[in-house]
Image 1 (cartoon, protein in one colour):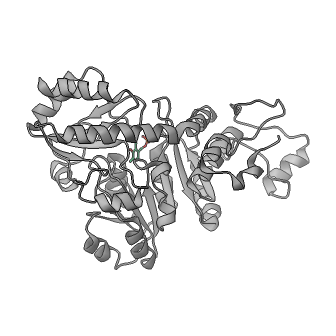
Image 2 (tube, protein in one colour; image 1 turned 90 degrees about the vertical axis):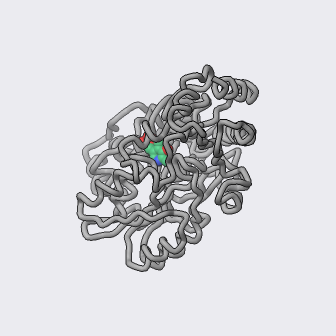
Image 3 (cartoon, helix red, strand yellow; image 1 turned 30 degrees about the vertical axis):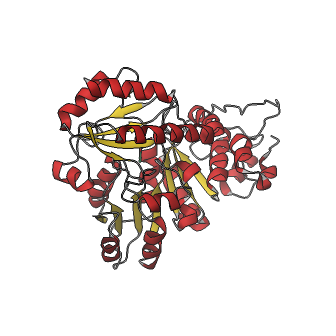
Length: 400
Ligand SMILES: *Cc1c(COP(=O)(O)O)cnc(C)c1O
């Protein structure tokens, strides 16, 4: 294998997105190859022995541990994020679970922000306690609540910003400082911001997790996840052991799809934001819409923090509240002709969902209210279509 990796140190962001991590095989292919193989062969028995006892040169031994196509995806995403390490996983949730599980153990303590993706909330409130880990959720925008929760030692802090679906923006630098004093690693679920808008590690976070299923694929094709960080000891002593022995490996085919997704990520995110900004302003003017939550709007409760933390831009997701409650929200969804009803997000196609009855259905009603989710709320993932078609679709559906 020849590799372009070594040239990447001086490359600028756009070049890294297109070429970072590329490792050409002897066939000199232009696009990255898909190494759709589970195992690898050895010339001699002694070579196999040396690969397993660690005395030989580093090489591929089994695709649960590492694979060339998955490796190219990991390297490219690490370059975009500015992280030393990236480990790909089969889904966003396996990234979340493994990052948390490798950071704590029975008798440990994890503090999280309350406004979380449904499955992240399940891991914190139900799964970790089952393994003897004490967990506590706080209102992520309440600084005093973080101070109180982190006045006791903790292993990890888990947060999502902007949060799903209420688009709360949390102060990563402030929380990281408190967390580190409490001895905790800070894990940020950066799905909504993407690495294009927000680099949590530059603000003090230790670990960044992605659902690559969302903007990194961006075209609704496959699942994937990633864990990014700088701590070599955590990698060698904790995370690698977890990944090797529990096997949440990403398929090489999915890694290839996601690798190609990274090439156009910043172009797509730019267009998602252009459309979302225009749509957030447009929706703010509609009488049926009682509230628009979009970090890019001055009316957003954490607008200034969002602008500081997210490269001055609001992202591709909007939450709206309809004055007519659940009935009006369902009517709007049912009368859309272009925008699809779907709980996915970050897609080229605009998608709308009713979080109360879908993504957060299993969260008890009072907890949903505490998270800021209401029965009249809809989440819009703004796609790449012509903005005038999106406006016309919403206008017609609102008028019914
Ligand atoms: C979708 C999502 C996840 C889970 O990712 P999967 O790839 O669906 O497993 C986690 N966090 C956030 C914020 C998400 O939007």
